Length: 399
Picture 1 (tube, one colour):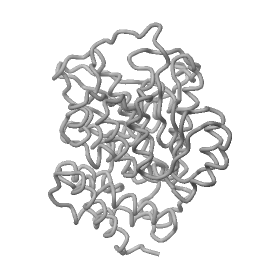
Picture 2: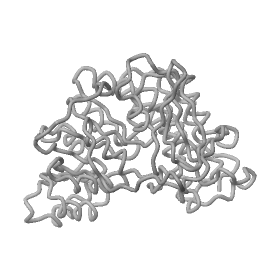
Picture 3: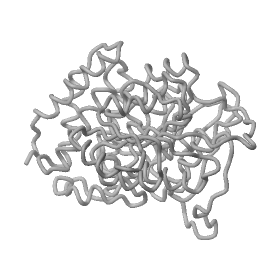
């Protein structure tokens, strides 16, 4: 599923690579377009897709001039089509149209940045079509890692992670021989509540939860960072990307977010990828691989970094991390149930219907519906049941 990690050959004089950006109006999508705009001779954005924000999508389309755009929300189709009238840009709507963009022959690279399980079918379609997938939608591997892996193996598709931690691991492994890894270490900022007394977690507001101390992210992923579910999902993603079992993937809290992840090798040595917290860097790594392109991203000033600190992750304070490890060890559909229930729990927290400590309780309710599942339809059925369980669950702190 990963590309050949031996030192790659460069691509001098190649034509610009066609790029489809799925989830273009989100944080990763916006930064992807920013990176692509810096390299017009190397990247050509051929298509854009978004969920509901048709005004932003139309603005992006007028600036980028892709061949086609898709809005998943079919009720926004007429508005988007009207906004782009006379541009010559093909406009479509619906989930099937988004999936079709992932298969488009004009796109060599598919940036999978749709948040949540909605990104699963397009990512799977890209894997089946032999694309290079710049993967920011971790839920695709969490829900259906085996299916994506098998599809990529059949088609020759490669997956290059965009998450900063997985990009770090990926970069550390380039040039290393197969079977050389002892452990993977994912670093975590600890989120905005790392030092907050757990006794006050019931008073945490959505506004506090989305205020990440180091990274600029969307609301859902910011809440996931606050609960440390984001790191739990990343553990599952790392398992599928690098074929390493749960008991050899560690999470270490590193509040400065300077060291993005570490690979420990069988000979006792380690490699770490280091840099300021800036998502444009892993995005550019994914878009440029196997090359390295110059950029003016902020550099790390080694004389001013200050001390770098590390702490053990506390699963008593942040039980979502422990639930993710348990789901990975249980295998089957447990990760799919975990992800679905978490999406519902986060949405309920953001709309004020539950409180922060309820999130893991709702996730536990969703995990209870996990069962053997061998096909995509089986996994989607578990997804639906877990969402229903989390939607109906009540917890001690429920508003």
